[in-house]
Picture 1 (cartoon, rainbow, N blue to C red):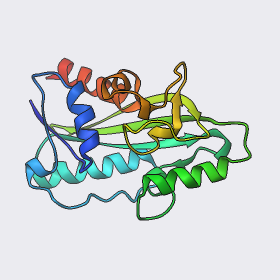
Picture 2: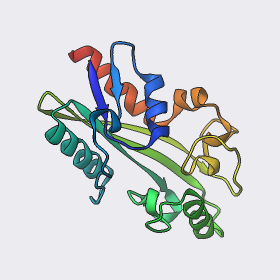
Picture 3: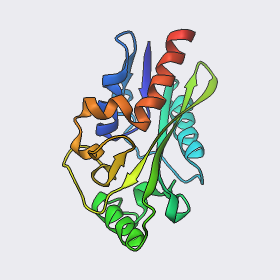
Picture 4: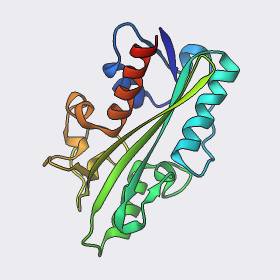
Amino acid sequence: MKICFATNNSNKIKEVALLLEDEIQLLGLKDIGCTEELREDQSTLEGNAEQKARYVFEKYNINCFADDTGLEVEALNNEPGVFSARFAGPQRSDEDNMALLSERLNSSENRKARFRTVICAFIDDQKYFFEGVVNGEITKEHNGDKGFGYDPIFIPTGYSQTFAQMSTEEKNKISHRSIAVRKLVDFLKTNS
């Protein structure tokens, strides 16, 4: 089965490709000739994931899925949430986003947070949602040089390393995205 992951983020594609079974061929947007930036202007993770997946499914006539992920920080009323990628502005800078988050959390003792990924898949004219959540906390300092986004300041519950200190394989065993993708893969295997 061929399925398109509606993203231009090569890091996400690499992470997901490692999780897929051999019988599922993962295509990126470039593989289907889509070079445009997909819109993400909805007010929820679910809305953004659906918006991207629906666009690709309808324009390119291919089974596809899209995700949206948010870091939800308890002390900040679950911000940045849906605005995680552009928290510090439209330049979408990981460093600026982490700096702003650290500034806002500076005086807070509550550093609880969670990463939440929502996947929307369009398979043969049907729409499906899958969610993955990993709880953890925000560190006071950046640690690690792997991963992307907020990975250098997020330690998952039960671990002593940030996502950015873990190998891709280690992160894929527990990450929010991998949980959601495993649900998608199980669904595809059961329904194909």
